[in-house]
Image (cartoon, rainbow over all chains, first blue to last red; front, side, top):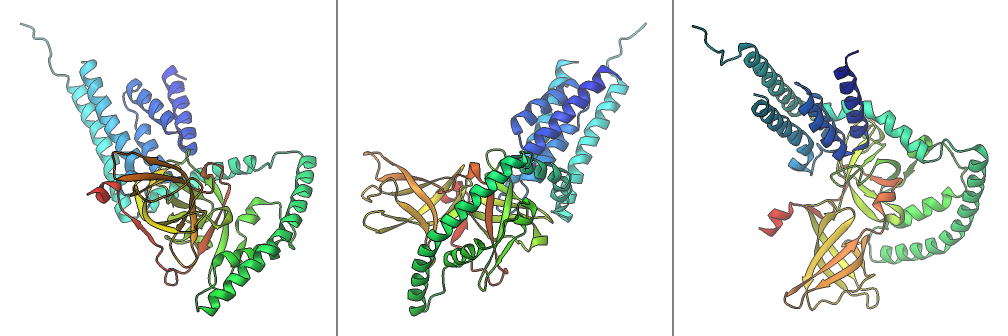
Length: 88
Length: 316
């Protein structure tokens, strides 16, 4: 198995455990690391959506219940743009 | 003549594919949420729920030795016997309270109902299984209290909410009030799934509602508007002339006077016309294991005196 695949599986397991336990700082750190390290890392957005689906997305919260999704999409976009500039 | 290639066609198409997949993912999430708002929460909760249940069982002592559990069971039985004696005293006071309210043609307090139900509980056999406890119903004529296990609580659960192990299959609906130990108001059900529900705590940031601060000595009531600060903390702004002390009880004004918190501090600035009263929930939300959900039909459920607005709007 390639080294990159092993790293990806480890990061995915950490992301899953963090989402289950609601450890958003870990999701943030490993999500950013994954987006930066891999060319394509949609797991970060899936983690954000899963986080909101588990703990947010309920009445009375409004936009606050979508913070995980919004932040993950924004981070994904910004890091991809930075990568594009830095690695030109 | 040779020219340096300035445009990488493959990289361009790869990037376009990448952006396309991200946009597609976002569009799918938005469309699913618009068509079926409970679809994504239901899927992810179904995947995660076994992990939460397992963690709850481990934390509740399922993996402890039989000797330890037997000793604990024995100690709990003794404690229940002792508490049932105390309950008889308080239930007599509550029944007297109900009689007085009946004289004034007001409905009986649910508190009294709980106490009378709890006292009858002491004669029941213990069910050590947590799953059987969580589905135990206290059915009453006017309201029905159901015990629910807290699967996730702050600070692990963000947004100042609880995740409990009862859902719409157990009769829960959005708006049901949730109580902690001692009939302390904690929050309300904000979303229900099949087997789990989300409870938005009243201390959630942005929540504002009417409260009454009762002076512990003079029993005078001060009406005020409380703002949730998160983590079971609240703040109230009152004129500086209002006298409030640490230890005063804060209630939600109604005939049943639900307790919501206790004053923990008063911040006074001589330069300001107002003072800030900080109060905290009587129940430590970080240690919550069980809560009571008041299951009433949506029609019969009177609107609770809670108004949800954002703090920014309130300031405007």
